[in-house]
Length: 409
Image (cartoon, helix red, strand yellow):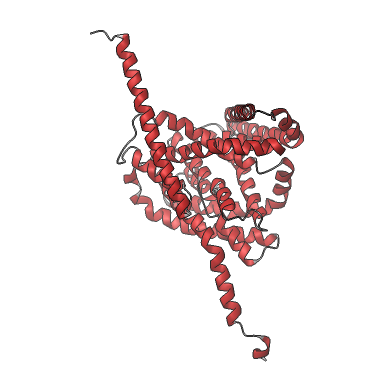
């Protein structure tokens, strides 16, 4: 029996209707979870990850019609997250921060890459997969830290520049790490890897030069009395640079980060206001998509490993923040605040694991990373909120119990 054109049109209509309905329900649920996160003071990331576990394959209510949209939205989410972070820096600030924070960035890598890498080797994984897990534990969540700094009103604290310099170093380290590891994972030759690395460094250097030397001119050209013009121009520029970066085997997110650095002045402030809602929507989509790929039944076997890795890597990050803040003369409380901020893991850890998943490495990497990020995305913000009053209380008790000079005499 022949299929009539009206039947095809009706089927498409039904699919679109189902997609809209399903998408609307998911967004409403995410809105409720975001409301819960605000009330509890926890980052919404773990809530989105849990929702993805429920809605993914093997979950209670697997999605049927919107996985394609969610996947595309997830890619845009990473790009916007890093672009908005780049807006917090000017080219000069970035250069100064890198020079001043280079020792802290190196210390961060030395302390926080080994826990994941060593665990991967102990699990019997091949060295490349172990390197991916090392990258997972090395990377701090820029998105979570940005939100915490704003929520806790710590942006003006003395320790904050030391934290931000570490984040910048991490983001630029990914500009080298991601293209090289991608080539090696797909079995590329050494020469191909070297070419990819040179292209990555060249692309990043070129965009940095443009951002530092011509950022103000670019911002003046983009600026307009119309919010619509500014929004469309900036969004188009972000996607173009991200696409070119991805084509050169540089992370699209790193390309977007560098675009953010290039914008300054009034246009940066307006862009921050205009794009913040889009960032929040697509960033939530990114975390949802990541956990959609994970079967909840795979989590219990790796839960104890994730907890152990979380404890070790939290301690190494706390020490990193303590050391970095101490270099610039920050007091004890500020040094602990810096360390607590750095414990959160999130978007880049998930990006690294996702690269491994697409390359077909050990599937346990994806599940272990999701469980680990879920734990650290909850523990990090909680630790940041309690560490300052906890340390302050301990210091007060010590000062009261410490004998005075007269009593000692």
